[in-house]
Image 1 (cartoon, helix red, strand yellow):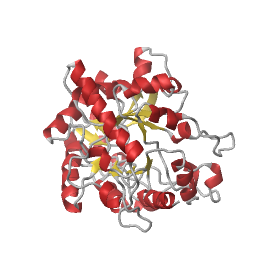
Image 2: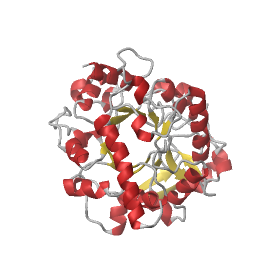
Image 3: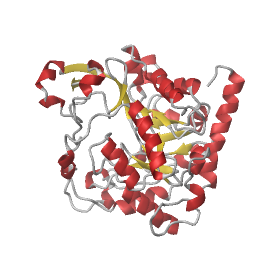
Length: 391
């Protein structure tokens, strides 16, 4: 986006109108599954320029791909999410390499998501750093060139919950963001419909202090591939509001502010001495401020329905209605099928890798009026949406 204030205001209004239509005017659709609403053909889009208006509501977002079934942030995970019916794929969490490339990893520390520990040539790269104020030990993407990272292979991040995913350890390399943008175009052609992605800038304050600013690199690649417009199939997100504000000045993409627990502070607030917490951001005043530079929020599910002391769901908050009043959509995170990640009343037994009643949990969250949800299990989400829309 340009620096002209009036132009920015006009474009912001246009973006909010686009998402407002998705919030208030959409009927859901599920491709290729029973119980599909008749609106499917009208709501799933194609190669047109309809942007987020083409997405079904509630939108099913493949969290790091299909990470319930494959190691996260790999092309194997991303493609499976599409195969399972995800409307959008979170590809990916963006962190930089030593030589300035953007790659897709959940965190810059890659000891838990790659086989780096088994590479003796990189043993001396293991170190301890202060990452957003937290002492973290391991291997970090910013200490590797892209060529070095490409010698590594992805592994399952939470094997205790997903032992079957370890079958695929070592199969896929670390994708770059540029590769993801090319893959998006390939998948759009292959599948005959526009594929949406939902990348996140990770720890932007941390990386800016290292001279590896994320927003400019993201914007440069989006402009290169013609994906920097308000109807772009690339939704950008970050836990740091100032990162979203920077992106708002650089590109015209749909923007989403991620929100952690109510008592937490975004790290950019910590770094600049801003005393506000997430609780301040989700007040009507805070939401109006966010609506001035973003089109949506990505709250933790606990901000939608808090949990009681025993882990069961309590009474829903007013966040959904409050956000909708100022034109913001809500894409909360993260629905997973395994027991430990579900509210207590939806668990079945105590096994850490066993599935609970995730369909029941999906329905409860959908009933709050959320516009979509991040899930590690896109197929479960798609079926749960079909059930919900069928009444």
